[in-house]
Image (tube, rainbow, N blue to C red; front, side, top):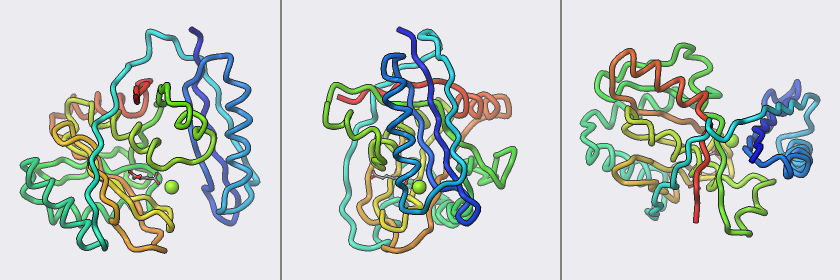
Length: 242
Ligand code: PML
Ligand code: MG
C-alpha cells in the first residue's frame, strides 16, 4: 500500500505557533486528510493563521515500524500537587531517586516547542539545540474503531499523546516520558514507561495555566543518544490501537 506522511503547521505573527498535526495515511485518504487538517488549522481557538504549511512525503511500507499502543491506566487526582506526587512516586518505582530534581527540570520545557532529553542519572540535558528541544515526529495510529478514526481530523489530546508516548518509550534507551499539555483548558497529563505503560493523571496542573512540556528520560552512551534522537525524529511509526 502506498502511504504518505502529511504534516500541518499553522502560525501567525501575533501568536507564533497556532496549530500542528501529522498523519501517515494511505494514498486514497490523502485528499480527505489534507482538507481535515486545513479545517483544523483555520478553526483553532488561538487565532487565524497567516501561514499554513502542509508537507506531504511518500512513505515506503518497509520504512514503517508497527507497535501496539501502551496499556493505559488512570490515576484520579484533585489538584496539581497531588498529580506531581503521583509522578514522583512512579519515578521512584522506576529506580529514579532524583525525582524531585527531575520535576524541577521539567519546568524548563514549558517554553520549548520540543521536549527535553534528560540523562536519567546525571540529569544532564542532552538536546543538541536546547531552545528547540527534541520533537518526536512521523507517527500515527491505526485503528478499527470508527469513532476514534473519525475523531482524527480534530484535536484529540489523548489519542495523539498515546501515539507519541508509545513511540517514545519503545526506544530501548528511553526509561520514561513526562508530559503536561500547554493547553490552558487541558489539565490531564501522564507519565509513560515500558514498565508501567501510559499512566494518565487526571489533574497535573491548574485550569487556566499555559504551562506545559515534555521530558524524555534517557539512559545510555553517546552513540545510543545519537541513535535515539534519530529514532525520535525520523523513524516512521504506526501505533495499533484496538
Ligand atoms: C498535548 O497537549 O499535546 C498533550 C496532551 C496530553 C494528553 C494526556 C491525556 O489525556 O492522556
Ligand atoms: Mg498543545
